[in-house]
Image (cartoon, rainbow, N blue to C red; front, side):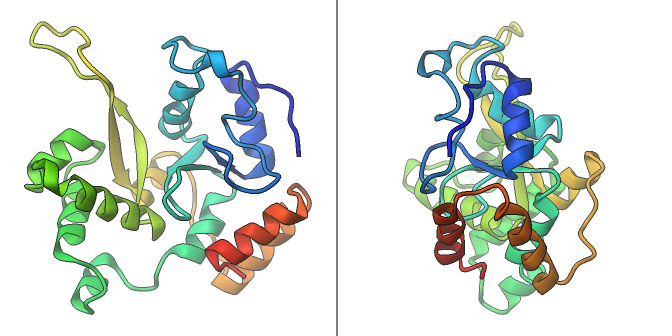
Length: 226
């Protein structure tokens, strides 16, 4: 499936709305990605037309949820489809209940609690407050973050600029996180009233009209949503 090249945030937004799920990179067979629908030389320019900046803008404006919801690769999920996806991937138990059942490691619980207590916290601060600043803990830290996104407990909420003592921008922007439910409430997105079975039926009925058959099959087999 091909789409016209998007040169503006608004054009890319239309693709997200239409497809429902748009990965940043092209890993779903016969399915567009933010990379494939934009020009290579538009990336990392720091300009308004930079798709690298759009991904955080989608999240900050509530246009689409942004995170690693289905595996370890980042995706954009439209505000319309996100409640259906969360109904399918979110466990029935809370984070605390999963920890008590032995299904979550202590660092994962600690990260979740820190995000809950510090809304829109940036990664650097999150690592500091959870005591996972050492380089050797970077992989474990990222694994915990991914697992909490895979269960729709947290989402990327945007970015924060790193400023020097003089208040000027210094270094790369930092990714910020919030609870998924808090992000939805902030942007007026309600939880779906459907059961997991009903949500699955509605999700696939919707994407089968817009996705190539190979892409639908990949989603079913890879993420076991069938």
